[in-house]
Amino acid sequence: MTATVLKPHNKLPQYNTVTVLLVGAEGTGKHELAKGIISIDEPFSVQIRTATCLPLSTEDEESRPRIDFICFIVDLTNRESMRVVEESVKHVDLRYFLGRSCFVALKVKCPEKRGVGLELVSEFCDHYGAPILYGALETDQEQITLAKQILNMAKVSAGLVNNISPLLIDSTRRPYDTQLL
Amino acid sequence: MSSPIKNITLHNTEGDLVESLNRLQKVDTEPILTETLVFPEKIGVTPSCVLLAEKVEHTKAEINIVQNSPLSVLPDSKEVHYGVIKEELEKSLSELNDTLTFINAEARELENEIHEEERWNDQISDVVLDSLSKRLNEQNFETNDAEGAKEKLKSEIADKITKANMYFKQLLKDSSQFCGKYFKLPSEEEFNDVQKKLRSADKTVTVRNMLSLKDIISELMNKCFDEPNHPYIVLDKRYWPPYVELLLRCQIVVRHTDDPRRVKLIPFHL
Image (cartoon, rainbow over all chains, first blue to last red; front, side, top):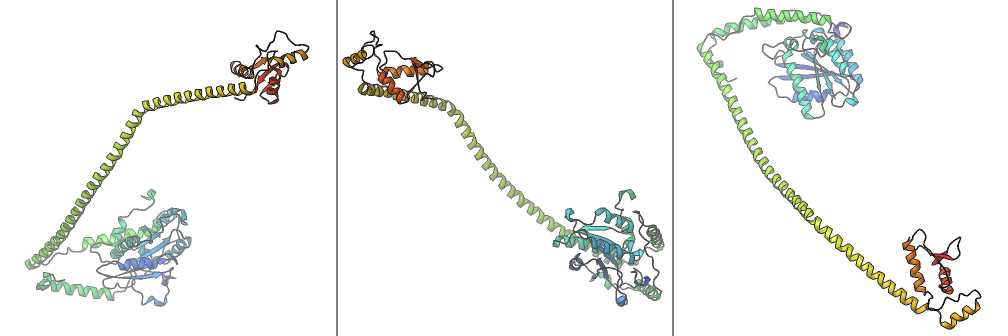
């Protein structure tokens, strides 16, 4: 159990590289999002890993690079995706939630098809102290917007931005539940 | 990086570089943090206490690092300063140039847009003016025409009335001609024969004061219009019985239900 928990500091970083892990159930559009992130032109190299759930298998533990940033993808029309995320979060080290992870809520445009309540998601995110990105992957524009937001955070958590730490970003954020302010 | 910094002799930076390299190598051999912190089970809505505690600790550590690390200043060399400043200026210059081109392009675009809008405005106002004046003309025409239409209607109605009158007169003439031709009053002999046959013959009635079919019909019609509630006429000796019989048989007149001497015209006009 302890061996399979993802930790942010147990490996050395690679030079000028950002590694992002996308966690989400089947059919949530991880690969579209990954393509969107890779298509953005940046002066460093970007690696994307995808997983349908955590924990990751122990076999390729050695060859896996250090994961700088984790995105948990929730499809709001798919209850299974929420459940997968809830399960996966248990296999992640607490230090990832100090600004090195985010939740992505997809398909926010059609509230009538929603299977997962927004309150549930924001409550969940408040508990884990991670930001939520709301978006969709239907058009290229939406993909790029979402990918840019993710990459900006990933860049900071990989230490590629001078004088800015992920914790600094995190401490400027407010919880979603206004009662917690 | 084709910056001028590269070409500068690195006498005073060389030592720094070596020092950094040594530090990095030391980090590489140091044991890596492998302790695991797992999230406790989710309870309630509030952020987890463990998470908050960890946050505080990390924040303190970062503040400590920032406070204790020496300010990184450029090496004290005029050439380095000159190079850095020059590079920055060039960068900002090129950026400003880009901005200028962008703004020029935008201004041109906006100008084009304004022209387009003006053109549209002109066109639209023309169209609106056209349609408004057209509508105004129509309105004027209609109001002028109201009097004329009244007059026209009056004359039309008068025309109709005269035509109807003429037709009515023609009909009267025709019917009187027809009656006079085919339904003559009986001759003196005929009348006398009938008078002789009838025992109850009234001697006061002569051929001269008999009423013709035309007179009977006109009397019936007049009665019909003068007293529409009681259009009966009383039959007496002056009415030639065969004609009365004819009218009855042809269902032009009907008898009164109670009084057999009274007859009335069938109300054809109703």
